Image (cartoon, rainbow, N blue to C red):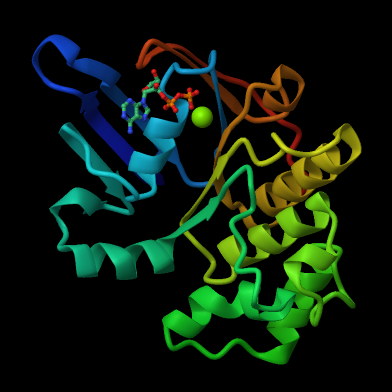
Length: 231
Ligand SMILES: Nc1ncnc2c1ncn2[C@@H]1O[C@H](COP(=O)(O)OP(=O)(O)O)[C@@H](O)[C@H]1O
Ligand SMILES: [Mg+2]
């Protein structure tokens, strides 16, 4: 089942002589359950692409269709609601709210959506993230790896159609990186969670089911392979 369809997506910065395409007519499709790694040198347009997939920016040209809905044809208000329900986003620097506890940070998108999350559901999530017992801590009391688990929890609380992660391990040591990667793999296998992850760590990228390579705002390579899916 197709979950994402990107058509001729472009992002231009500057005007006239300074005109520059950070993304140059990108097209791609992603099916439910795929784990896509996006790689490429710094400045190749990876974050620009991810931000556009997440509805965080406006394209200069082209369309992003998620779950059969054209997100840039929506009003700002519709897009905000759609994003909260359908798209989970994780960044390199966690972007947690420092004044809120771990539990409050994770529940924030559900709260905005007027959704009640049962204690059982919350406990399952926090257990699967490996941060049970940290509910009342504040982000600053946690290690980077733990903060990223909280950010992952916040991204997953509304069961998004698609999880976007921009260098989610970029600020972590190799042990914490591996733990975050294992969590992503687990959600991908167990819940068939669709994931698109930007990374410049080729060892991590190799663990995805598909590797898309970008250069100068274009896709120059797109390779799929089987990952061993546990039943
Ligand atoms: N807001 C912006 N204004 C001007 N140029 C930008 C802006 N955002 C990104 N760029 C440029 O677009 C190119 C792609 O950036 P980015 O998507 O962040 O690359 P990556 O994530 O692959 O390192 C870079 O050359 C960057 O300098
Ligand atoms: Mg980037």
